[in-house]
Image (cartoon, rainbow, N blue to C red):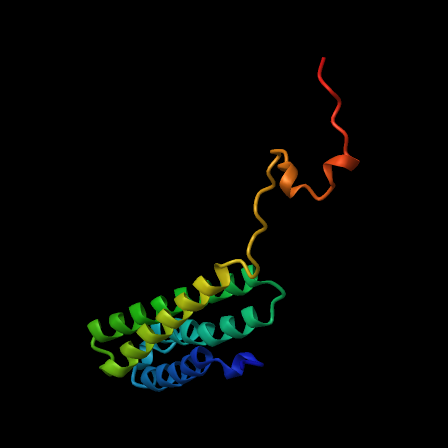
Amino acid sequence: MVRDYKDLNVWQMSMELCEKVYGLVRGFPTEERFALADQLRRAAVSIPSNIAEGNGRNSRTEYARFLSIARGSVSEVRTQLELAERFGYIKVPEEVYETTHSISKMLFAMIQKLSVPSSPPSPPRSHAPIPDSQSPIPSSQFPIPNSP
C-alpha cells in the first residue's frame, strides 16, 4: 500500500533519472553550464517535484494536473537530451531514454486512473410513475380518484 509519494515507483524512478541527468550534465562544455545544462537540470528536478506536490494536494483533479505537468517535464528532458547529443556535448545511454519512456507511461496510467470518478455516478432520476406492483405505498393507502 502506498502511504507516501516516496513509496511510488514512478517517484523513485524519476529521482534516479534526475541523478543520471545531473551526471550527464557534468560532461557539457563550460559555455553550456548555464544554458541548456541548467534548463535540463530544472526539467529533471521538476518531475519528482511535481509528483510529490500533486500527491500532497487535496483532490484527484489537482493530483492529475501535477502528474500531467511532470509528464510534460519528462518530454522536455528527453528533448533536451536529444539536443545535447545532436550538439555533440554528450552520448546519452539508451537506458536513460528507456527510463524516460517508462516514467511517462507510468504517469499516463496514473493520470487515467485519477480521471475516473472515485464512486459511480448515481443513475438519472426517472420521472415516470412507479408501477403499482413496485410502489412503496400500497395502493389501498394511496387512493386514485375515479374518473367521471
